[in-house]
Image (cartoon, rainbow, N blue to C red; front, side):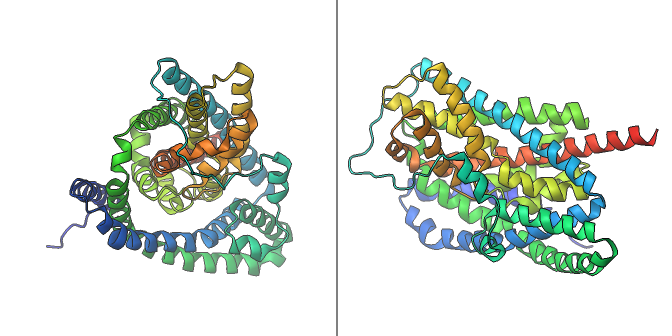
Length: 411
């Protein structure tokens, strides 16, 4: 009899648990250097493969999704609904982050810390919204691909997809080329994804082995605060949205999105999780063309986890400075964090850079980031998980809205 193979989600869960066990053993036996020297490089190879496949998959999947819609009006309809969903949920994420952060601060649970002497933060970035807006539009297509500027890649995909649709019969050859090349990259992607249990095991073992001591320290409180915010947002906003609009129960939603959530937690990269997110979304009923459009867009502009993190971290770092945020400053945090999260790249570690924008906006020294920079990976894992959960929820909601719209039009 043929042996039954474990499914990919089960393989990922087993790899996750094994990674945690190995990481704990290395941590408590003071052999964390083993994971850094021998396991992390293997995980890095896997992450590099994912980064390699991300740009062509995002570009081709979005173009393919636009073409499959067959109508520019549908592209516009799906586009504005997707952006509206993400803007509303990001604003709610900021409110939740501020509320939970303020509660922890009010209870006196945030420890008073000082910046380590000699530490310097040199990654501060401009909070100029117009600069962010201008940088969305590429001046050189190849430069956007080379630098993996996902916002620019998405604009390129929208323009090319729209151009192919507008060309009509003359664009037939382009349609065939996109379908053919996309099929090839999908096969390459499938091969890479089959390696995901190896990547999950090696990266999780390294994270647990090297970051365990920091988790046990006083900064664990702000980590707890952030994860409470992540959990509340996922349950109250995402699962209830899926229930209200896509008629999927919260239990079924989290079960269906589980594989993508685990993968995102270990890889800490929204764009790297795209293939798994798409598979989960389609299994739960998202239309292929809608998922192909919404998920890559969400991986770039939906950063609700980043928004929660920025708000919690802002209150924490302000408390470290002895600063109590006013209502006006909190409003500034919501607006800035919403805009900053949209401009955050869907790659590991990008959120902490955008935090500098929020701190600058309210006058908290950017150098304070160094207090939590050492454990940012632990924040990143949770916020990435929340981000891709939102992407999947959005694809399900938009699919439901489009189906309802088509049903009304058919009457």
